[in-house]
Amino acid sequence: MKIEFVKITSLWSSVLFAIFAISHSIPLQADEKIGPWNLTKLKQTPEMQWVDQTGPVHSLLYSGEEYQGHATEAFAFYASPITLGKAKPGQTFPGVVLIHGGGGTAFAEWAYLWAERGYAAIAMDLSGHRPPDPVYDAKTGLPVKNQAARREGLTRLPNGGPDQSHNEKFESIGGGTDDDWPYHAAANVIRAHSLLRSFPEVNEDQTGVTGISWGGYTTCLVASLDDRFKAAVPVYGCGFLHEGESVQKPAIDRLGERRQQWVEEYDPSSLLVHCHVPILFVNGTNDIHYVLDSYQKSYDVVPGFKQMRIEVKMSHSHPAGWAPQEIGIFIDSFCLNKPALPVPEQLKGEEGKILVTYKSDLPLKSAALHYTTDEGLRSKRDWVSVPGEFNDHQITVASPPENANTWFVSMTDERGAMVTTPVQFQPPLTKNE
Image 1 (cartoon, rainbow, N blue to C red):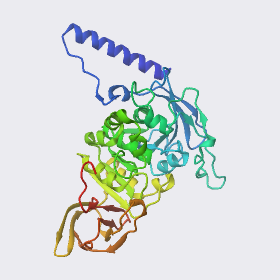
Image 2: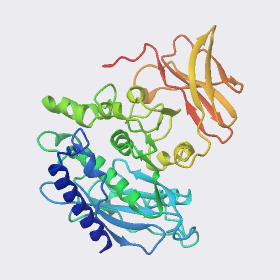
Image 3: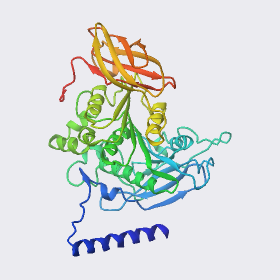
Image 4: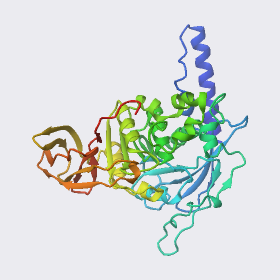
């Protein structure tokens, strides 16, 4: 009843203001839109209902966008220090939105991990399904790992939105947006963010977002659309999927005359130009799904504050994607004002050496040059890492060999937190490469 009362009151306030504005010749503010997304609408708190609040990780349903002519709902797990029994009602926390990748769903253990960090965390399913209820270890009380790793255990929601196959991601483009997975995915994440911000235990101005693989792709979209986030961390996912060695390129090319529309509406390369949310790109050198060339191009088009963490041969999975400590450190630095990651500044060559100036809240413990001289598919190339020297403001590493075609410099602080310079290519990347 409380939610309905607030919504009715808000509706009447809007109606009364509209009548007043018209009668006094005050212009009404137009809805904020980027691409097909009505951000004014998505930033409103969606309707929701709790499904289960008995365990440390709660479950809920919230309203989504219309799909094939009918209203939808999305499933989500929610956890906070209060649900874990580590804080009392009345305390407040920063919030985080967690976006699964392709073949994944809402992960109870992921929400639990962030609640242990001191965050209120929401992890939604973006495929119109719900995963099994969490199972907890009898000894530790922790959620059993990888419960949602196999999609055979998912249940289709009666009012679920589109699934996440290639058909919904690509082939649906054209006509209306109501059957396009990228549209629904970004919209449902923004709705989840609006819901999270409405909870009394959440500090609404201290929220971040991170996602893995297709969830990283979606993180790029929502960080470009939803300026309420204070930090964003896409893992693996990026834009420029229509170029180079991207495994998604064949599916995009098959769209024919609709190809350019998909790129303009749903490839993050078209949206990241709007991104002013501080963003940390996390990926590996050999990722087959989101190739290093496309990753660097995605980084380059962001006009706001941006950082990069490239790990040599980082593996690709949900657990590997949420494991890097730099994700939490980056979000903490913007939501909780904790020590930030090191920030590389100027990079230049000088007499057989590469010099990188940097700033860091904490002392460095190591630095290195990473390069490859291999040709062929990036996913198959071997890399060489060479330690460098550093002082309190500059890193010095030997220049890569003349036949190196790709290289970057990493720096690691005393916490073991690592960041890298932008990736350097020889010859340099071009826009349509």
